[in-house]
Image (tube, rainbow, N blue to C red):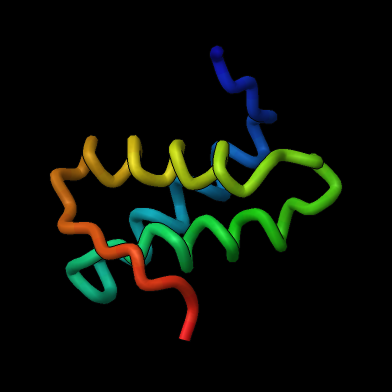
Length: 71
């Protein structure tokens, strides 16, 4: 099934992944996905779908990933 996201959410997601990667050298997929979801709650997109997109964007950057959730 194809996930359709608004351009606003995609822009936020892309910027969040890049910021996390450049700031820490690693992308905490769970934390970034939850941050993006909470900022875009009105979009009504499942956390799992956002998580999949965060992982895909991190892979495009060849970024190391972790899945610890928020601290």
